[in-house]
Length: 316
Ligand SMILES: C[S@@+](CC[C@H](N)C(=O)[O-])C[C@H]1O[C@@H](n2cnc3c(N)ncnc32)[C@H](O)[C@@H]1O
Figure 1 (cartoon, rainbow, N blue to C red):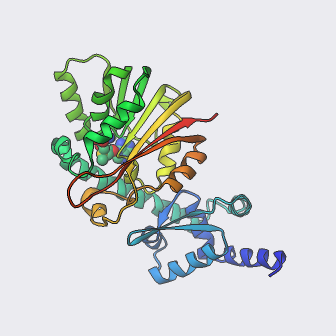
Figure 2: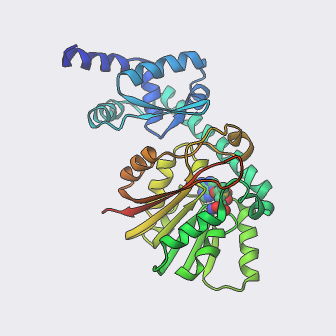
């Protein structure tokens, strides 16, 4: 097929109402077929058919994950430029598009509320629960090795939960701030820190999506077992990145891809682990460089989840 024909095929793919709506939604971040079906209020086979046309045209990319599939706009420059141009011509106040955005907002709120309700229930038991599904001691030893000779003026632990990362790294910073959106988690962390009578670790209620007050304030940012709770971990990483001082680093600690589908329901996971390819793409779009990655397999009999530590450095 000639390039001209290819181009017409791409325009045909985008030139349909549902598919344009899908492009506008995916411009807001990665979404699963399930979410897109709910937002568009169309049958799953129908939405999947439209997504297939867009994927085949190269305008979007698909990532299969257990029983779910996630979609995002293509990373390819020419496809991205075309989609952005098309979307810039749309009237954002259009009644159909603004209803889609309102439903997207509602779907995201619903995910956040499910996660918040899970964490409020488990907050008191979190310190016991957290080690059940991760090889804690090996992971913590590897984290300590990575920061061995470092001393930071300010460390920020995003999604701090009960503040374990602050406790672990307390010999390595002057001021440590843990931020979490769960009041219950924060209050467990706070009462622990109060008992320890420390004066350099603080916890604050806050959302990873809104970190303006911490802009460019930390030399090290931790995201320990947090990103798998996001539909689009790349967006959360971009937000985290804003809190980094020039030359700073982010340590992401999370699961490698796995197939434990029940974790979505039982423990509010949105993503079944993160792959090296995904991390490289998310890091690049946050202007970060993957400096090191260390995989730590589970040491329990019968196997389990592999954890990975990605050390991301500011490349600006
Ligand atoms: C699996 S726990 C990990 C807690 C801690 N980092 C650890 O490893 O023990 C995930 C934490 O992320 C928090 N969280 C989820 N979404 C968040 C958001 N948008 N902003 C801030 N915290 C969030 C949850 O409340 C929860 O405490």
